[in-house]
Length: 504
Ligand code: ADP
Image (tube, rainbow, N blue to C red; front, side, top):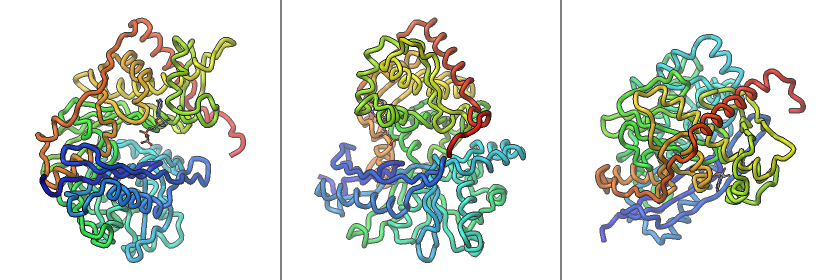
């Protein structure tokens, strides 16, 4: 058997840190995960403790190595994938963060984003970065830290502070501060990276008041990118792949050709479409982003995200106590033949693409005396599909060819009722792969290519289909559903701004 046959994938997510070990055929040899604490210091704020992110990640890696009884010298490379946009700032000399990590979901910079839009910055930002101005992306979070943490601005101006997304933070830790790097996919989510010139954009850095010295060096998604300090695992291991979670999933689904698309149904839902060498600046509020850069070739993607997807099922479980676990949602929903005319708009944290309305709030329409728990649950599941369909419709309007096929993954993709309804209302063919952990698999692909174990060609046959879903709902019913959904959404937009908030 060949030496150096394993890849260690580190998948630092929003709620868990996970480590996977794959053999050279991408069979999973070991897996460990740790769930960590979320902090909500104020309404709309979400933070993580940077040391916990690191500690939980490294612990799962060490445990996976011992679970798989892996000799460190047999690990050919490490792949790192991460929750994107989440923002950390630390002191370069001490390595100590100046503030907790501000998580992608955090809305504290909403008012500032609104001001920027009112000042007419949207077009320039979209042309350069492919993104829309929204608290979701990193730049306004960096600015918030510099403006609100005592002495942060002075220290930043003296070159003493470093910014990083979670990939950068983990690599800083793994290399003991030797490498301050990120990859193109993560860089393209910061709102200050020019996706055309492939450089940090000075004009945008100035707009947000971020000194360039804070920014990491941007590297390819695959290659010999860094080496871990020998003290971390006992021996040094090369880091050979990095990618933001959704881009990693796109690669893990082997959507390597233009026109291929995937949707991940997790806490939120993330749809991404490979647009090849073309940057499509959306006229329908999707975002253009870098999928990956391999060698000299940059591949772009179009992306849309839904903030509350599977999270709605968690809400049914934890707050309404309709179900004991997420799997039960499908069993309960199956008890109703349809949603009984109920439409659930899960704008619990506002609405993301294509609405981008932070003031929308959740609403349930069409409740009657006869409405059952099963119908409400079915409506909740269907709302996930409606939101993804909105993304698909918006993307299709930016494209020459319609999307006819969608590869799916994520925790909620285990719900067949959801996937069938998606196929029905979007009249699209859904393909679910055997390996649903496409994020960690995708970065394992990058890492194995970087370690020269594999090429794209040799990876191709590693993707296999477990299940397919084809549309079968009557066309008239589809039209009625879509019309009703649009009406429901229109009534929940702007709720927070046109009503008086009670309590915090
Ligand atoms: P993330 O990576 O965003 O943490 P996962 O991909 O692990 O999320 O998926 C977890 C989400 O999927 C949770 O929000 C959970 O409620 C939802 N989920 C899991 N199983 C099901 C199911 N059978 N039906 C609907 N939702 C589900």
